[in-house]
Image 1 (spheres, helix red, strand yellow):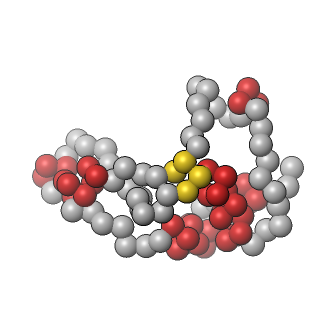
Image 2: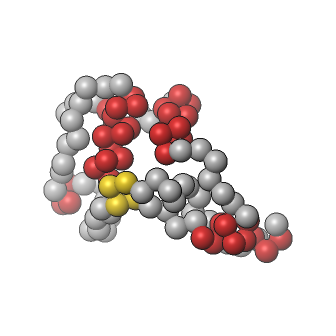
Length: 96
């Protein structure tokens, strides 16, 4: 659509609200590893700015309005497809 030119869109499934801890546990379960989530202090994280994202729920209202976008797959299916594509680094699911 022409009216989409120059815009940035958040694409995801807004019906799949989850905490970041819940998301991490879901990825671990779908990868099939027996590891625990490792919590690190912000000063040891690979972040440039201190911030904390507690919950994950994408705002796709702009994509709906301009693109007519509607999610078609579940969060679990999206994660499973990402795993199958090889785009989740093995190091993310290794016990440190």
